[in-house]
Amino acid sequence: SYEVTQPPSVSVSPGQTAIITCSGNKLRQQSACWYQQKPGQSPVLVIYQNDKRPSGIPERFSGSNSANIASLTISGTQATDEAVYYCQAWDTRTAKLFGGGTSTAGIFGGGTKLTVL
Amino acid sequence: QVQLVESGGGLVKPGGSLRLSCAASGFTFSDYYMTWIRQAPGKGLEWVSYISNSGTNIYYADSVKGRFTISRDNAKNSLYLQMNSLRADDTAVYYCVRDGGGYYLDYWGQGTLVTVSS
Image (cartoon, rainbow over the protein chains, first blue to last red):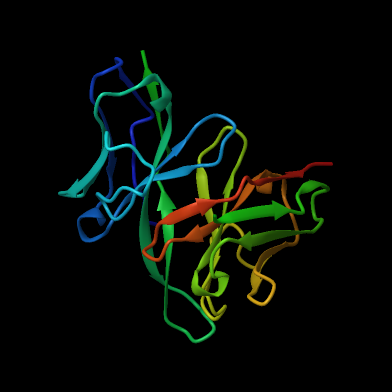
């Protein structure tokens, strides 16, 4: 089955730039998105469709996707950015639906723990 | 504002059943695909099931196929997950999540904990 892979951890100093990657051999043809999850909280969408930011997400969060690698970049990282970040792509497969055809569902990377030292 | 409130979680014995519910408000529920995502304790996110806005397209992860049933009642702005033949590895926080319209999940509920243990 299709998988996307993230590094387990990334460390960054406050004010520096953090880059978290997500690799998958179909990413070039897809859009990726990113979620931030802080301890005890639900995930929050921070980037969708590769590089779009939902309202309320700070401009220091940006995304890109090329050559089968999606990246989340956090510029001027703050202590409040410390969290686990998940990338999400999608997988289309043939499956039995009510009317037959394909199904497409999301797949998550394993998550990257961002530590702000 | 968009709100998703899950209920129905709890402790159940292996082989037992639970029905999760999600009450949606703040948006036109019938316009959106909805999804159940789960997270086992200390683990990552898993896409469990989704249902199209009309209910005609449904997906299940292989891990729950044949045991879980997703449904929705657009008149009641509610999403459901019927979970049968529960196993210990179904223990997780289950999130009700809205699909924003392009395979991304833009609003998450607070989650409800399901614990399968004897």
